[in-house]
Image (cartoon, rainbow, N blue to C red; front, side, top):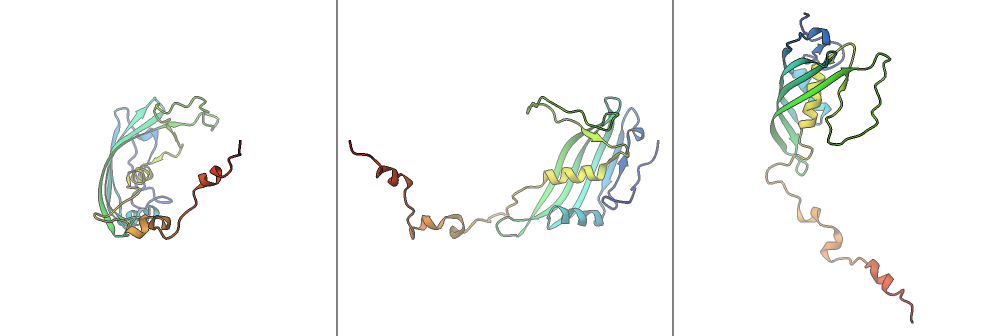
Length: 188
């Protein structure tokens, strides 16, 4: 069994860990990832964060349906996002469990087309590339999904002028569209 190492090249420096189906024994494999300062800086820029102080993941990679892989784990992160109102830093500690499933594409290189769509069904597996899964990229995607889309600093509120339309202050009266219809009545 080969040792997982940072394979360099494209991806996140110090956080790229590629694993193939051949790297995983039948009883699974434990993998721990900790993002380097350079990888955290890249992710902070990628996701528009004020800062990414820490990012790590503990993963269990197991065989799934003979040729596929199942990655289960926990992501831990210490992030700062900009408040959507005041732009002040909003700190957050992330503790997210996730499971990802990968299956190889069919022999012809095409994905099987799915006809029936069931919104309550499990998500279909992701394609398992021949070169393997970059676990660092998979964790980075989970980080993006875990971020608060509308971070708000404690006590940050819109001012009265920002939260009301100019028509609400009484300075300008909008015409009522039904007034026009009332005047269109035909005499009988």
